[in-house]
Amino acid sequence: MRNLNLKSSIYSLLVISGIAWFSIASISGLDLSKLVDFFKVLPKVATIDFILIGLFLKWGWKCRIFKGWLVPFPNLNGTWQGNIETTWEDSNTGSSPALIPAILTIKQTFLRVSCVMRTSEMTSYSYSETFKLEGDSQIKQLSYSYTSRPLTTVTDRSPLHEGSVVFDIIGDPVPKLKGQYWTARRTTGEIVLTFREKKLLEEYPEDLGSHPVKDIV
Image 1: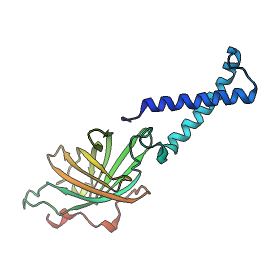
Image 2 (image 1 turned 120 degrees about the vertical axis):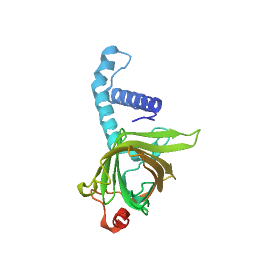
Image 3 (image 1 turned 90 degrees about the vertical axis):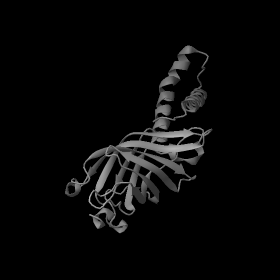
Image 4 (image 1 turned 90 degrees about the horizontal axis):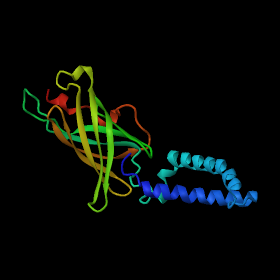
C-alpha cells in the first residue's frame, strides 16, 4: 500500500531489535562485544521481530497509538451505507432516477484495502486501490477503480462496465465518505456514505429499499 511511513517503520524495527538484542544478551550473560556471542543472539532476535511484525500486521496497526507517525491512513474496515446520485438518464424518458441506496464494504489490512459496493441491482469489485494522504494540502482520500457486475435481468440498460471512484475521508474518527465516480459508460455521480457496522455484509440489505430506476423504466 502507498503512503506507508517507511522511515518510521525501519526506525521502529531497529529500536525493537536493539532492545531485544541487549535484553537477551543480558539475561543470557553474553558479551555482545564478542562476535561469537553477538551472532548467538541473532536467531532469537529474528524470531521476536517476526512475531511482533506479525502481531502488528494482524491487529496492532489498528491501535490509535500508532496513528499518524507509523500508520498514516485511517481504519475504514466495515460496512458503509448511503446513496448514489447519478447522471444516468433513461433513454425513453430522459429522466434520472432518485437517490440510489447503496452499501460499501471495506476490508482493510496494513498492506491492502479492497472495496465492494452493492445496490439492489449490481455489485462492483475494486482493484488498484490507494490512499492519497497529504497533510500539507489537507487531502485525505481513498480512490479505486472497479468492475461493476449488474444482475442479468438489467443488463439491457446496465451492462457490465469499468469505473473509478474517489472518496474524501471526512472526520477523525471517520464518520463519512463523500466522493465522485465516473464510468466507461460516460456516466458520473456523487456518493455519500456513513458508517453502518463493523461486520462486512455479503448481501445488499433489504431495509435500504429497492433500486429507484424501476420507478422510471
